Image (cartoon, rainbow, N blue to C red):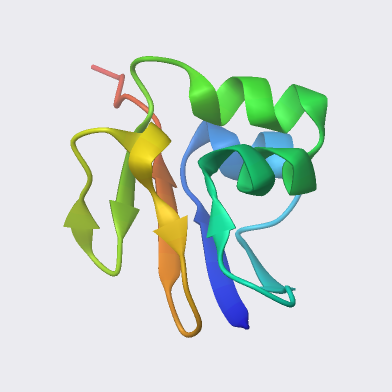
Length: 82
């Protein structure tokens, strides 16, 4: 199973990369996905205000995500500026 993680905004800076291709032997649920990210980045993407898109569609409850082969998961932090 292969998938792509996309980090946007401040999450890209925190991750040190804009995207990451991942491989796993089986689909990943939210908990398994967070374990792959490491504690600091996992905490950042778990924040309430960070939205998640699965294959371009916003997900209402990111805890219910299951990442399957070919999926793209994008992490979208809140936008700020002025």
